[in-house]
Length: 286
Image (cartoon, rainbow, N blue to C red; front, side, top):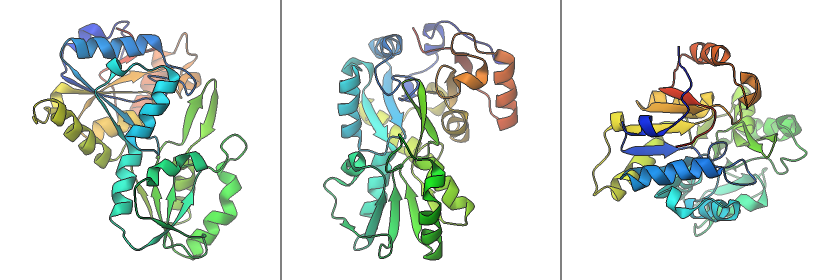
């Protein structure tokens, strides 16, 4: 039975490196969570390394600019590893091929500095999906015809954000993972570039090593922090990492409420997913 802890500080002593999720743990898509930022800053002051690990379909530099806008202080983290960075590596490895970008204009930073030729869906060699064109009005069902066309052409899809939904304030909005899952259900070939898949964790640990004298952290001394069973908890477990599960994020309403989550319901969810965190917190706080 996994129980709640009220303070992160005692648990933090067991770890040298944090791989901390961003959306739902550090901010809610509108503004930063001050207590979470303070906890990460305190961990760093005690000698720890914090790598923010996010399924944002943008480069780490672009994510930093967003965090600045939300008020996340720079002393809360050492570096950022994004699924956008992993996606860029895949695009770089397919020179000469044309891309259809399925996603909003704001995600075009994912291609910045790359030699990429874009094409209409009917002529593209493959698809990079970073999200919905308009996540305020559309759902995955809005893309039924487009996905059917992609399947008819046997197009390969690179999913730049495996998240299905994220919080934006008090609202849940669909992400690229929802589109990618719908395409995979049709038999389409999809490569997922973020959590819970290994490449983003490998990149994050390499980044942490660069901040720690080129010494790769022992996995038993690395703690993942996140709010999603599907991506954060499952990804950490698959990669051999402990996980601190935060309940006030995207699953909050499934757990009873943000203020009083149901520990028994949470443990049932963990059991069904065949994963378990080291501990749970309502919200990250030192």
